[in-house]
Length: 284
Image (cartoon, rainbow, N blue to C red):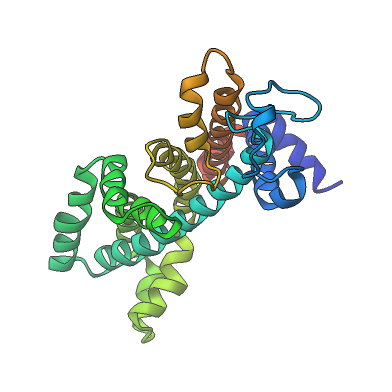
């Protein structure tokens, strides 16, 4: 009862948080359990049942090769989940390393990392940078993750740098330094735990951006090569059947929109929940 009461209060105050939680639960559940939820192989070709509309046999219809659209959606969710987690983890690791180093040490190191590293990457559109790297490296899971991480780490680094600079001269940091604690211990034990809240919010919103970027690269043919199902590749295949089989574009577009909305709603809810001033204003 003590757990359900604040949960109902939070849902009543933030209904979009509940919507985001449901969307993300469907996305994660479909991705993790795709091998058991899909009744058909996502690569099984059946030309005798191509371009079928949604039916009891194929809940989301079939594509131009007779492949089950629902199975491809579920396996596409699995791919999007793996890519988004991998890209955000890699971007966070690099962003925390570079941004933490620049913010904690300051001086010429901060100038060099901020001016010549962060600002250089931030000056280029992330999606164009990812397209260039993906085209250079070629299709593949690792190449896709690397291309998206290269285009997204600088935003995390700038956020970490700003947060580190705001807390590096606090009393508890000076006390740890006076007691002889090393730089790494101070950063990981005293600074990083106190700046993790905005990083979590940025990571949640960043997951949405990664899903969109992965769909874009797959749409352009720079993502995971066929026959691995991807939402972006499904949208690309549906272009020639927009009028005779609109379900081919409707379902993957709805999947991308639902996953992106879920992560954005989660990021907004985390921001409101972790910010003491916002919680006080909302009565949480």
